[in-house]
Each structure stands twice: as structure tokens, then as C-alpha cells.
Length: 138
Image 1 (cartoon, rainbow, N blue to C red):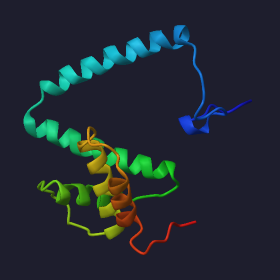
Image 2: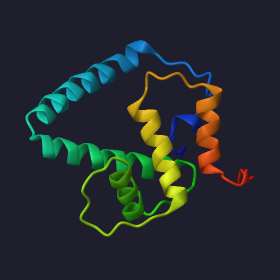
Image 3: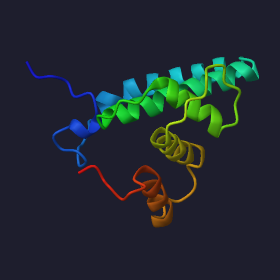
Image 4: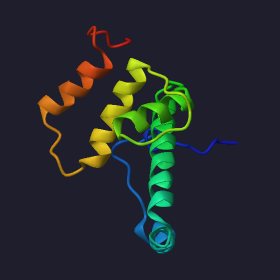
């Protein structure tokens, strides 16, 4: 039995894969509909609840993205770093980890400024933050 691929980059033809629009369109339409419902529900939340949801989504996204690369990040340190970098009140003790701070800073920059072009300067600034000694881990 063949295992379903969890990540898109695991597909055999990645990144030049194709799809059948007729097969995926109903699923895509449902996802768009559900997304609209979620946005509507979020708009009914208080500003504090919206900020808390955004905070938790960011933390989970950073942790999950790193897991794809095989890197396990401490959720407490990720949440602490996000709170510090966004100047949010945080009830747990602040825990400083410079590597996690760099991962969080890169992720926040990418997700909070999506219209900024990905220039070599921006890309290299992320690289310098992640690998201050120039070591790539390879």
C-alpha cells in the first residue's frame, strides 16, 4: 500500500506537477466557502480573542514549518519570542533563544510583509540571522 504524501514537495513530479481541475475544483470551492465562514466567525470575536488566535496560529505555523525541515522547536520558546517581537503581554516566563528568535523574526517578516519583494538583501538578511557563523548545517 502506497503512503499518501503529506507535504507537496514529496510529490514525485515536484515542483513540475500537474492536476485535474475538474477533480479538485469541488474541494477548492468547499475550502474557499469554509475559509469565508472562518473569516466571518473571526470578525465576530473580540479584538483580544482575534489577537490571541493570530498569536497561536503564528506559533503553530512556525513550529510546523520547522518540523517539515526536521527541526523541533520548543513551543514555549516560540510563543515567548513571538510575544517579545510583537510587544505582546505574555503570561509565561520569557525564555530567550537566539536561534528561535531568528526563526520567528524571519517568519514574521515573511508573513506580515507579503507584498515586499524577496530581494537578495532580504533573503541574505534572513540567512545571516539563521546562520550567524555562516554555517549552513550541511
